[in-house]
Length: 322
Ligand code: NDP
Image 1 (tube, rainbow, N blue to C red):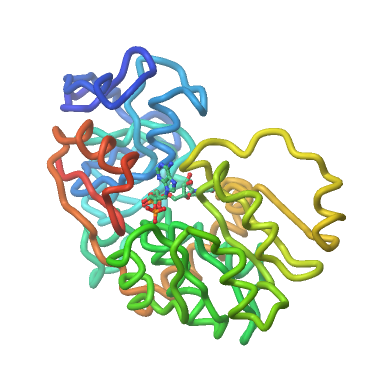
Image 2: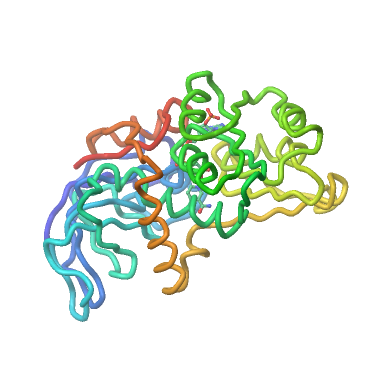
């Protein structure tokens, strides 16, 4: 048993429900490791857990990714040893803490050149970009792919990944500064949200995009359908503006025999083989992704960081440092 500082909420609500506490961590059980965190990745999903959009048991320590050093290993752990530098994402919250115990299966050795903050800023998001671009959209050279919230943590990585595979990324973001960041990350064009579907059609000679990768959700769902060409694909992978809600499937027919999917990282990294292949692909792409830490904040600032993320004030990825 060891005691660590953590951020926790008892009841769901706004950022103010996050409080700084001390919690007891058990020793790692069979197949588990304890990781001492050096940097913790902040993801929009942490706000869904805090608000109750994605239900979790309370009291809850939010956070689903971090980078750090293995401190202790439980019985049966063979792949990792105390002292190893590692990074992980995980399907249960608990990372907004100085350390956590989790199953070994999520934890990946962190190659020496990648520092902890960079790893925590990019790991979950790069794995998400990998499956979205390469296994969901299967983006081909020359294809037009729209990315909304393109200067966010996910958005910048999606722009880079699409550029790397030769697709033509069209970024949509709310401010001129954000659009400039998306262009610097490899987007070929950058648009504001006003009438962006019409702008995409103009850019694509009236045809529309092959795919839209959208993490904004409610406010962008219908414009995204309007931005697609016949038989185009909408990948709706998040709810930053709220969930899309019930949809009449007939709209896909009326807009041109469209396809849509609502994928999650955990369904694309579910089997050991796909986890190994996906993470290996991300590590091989890492130097090209130029992951930048948008902001480094102390762990105690988690509530302020959530408020800024939800108010669209951040760009890139924020990490918390214990
Ligand atoms: P971001 O850094 O992208 O922050 C969210 C961005 O969404 C904002 O900066 C803002 O950009 C845009 N936005 C548009 N409308 C709103 C609104 N009403 N309130 C808040 N933000 C808004 O966050 P992340 O990179 O952490 O996550 C991006 C999306 O990816 C989220 O929806 C998240 O759930 C999803 N995700 C899904 C995964 C999956 O497996 N399905 C895995 C990882 C992330 P702008 O001002 O330019 O509009």
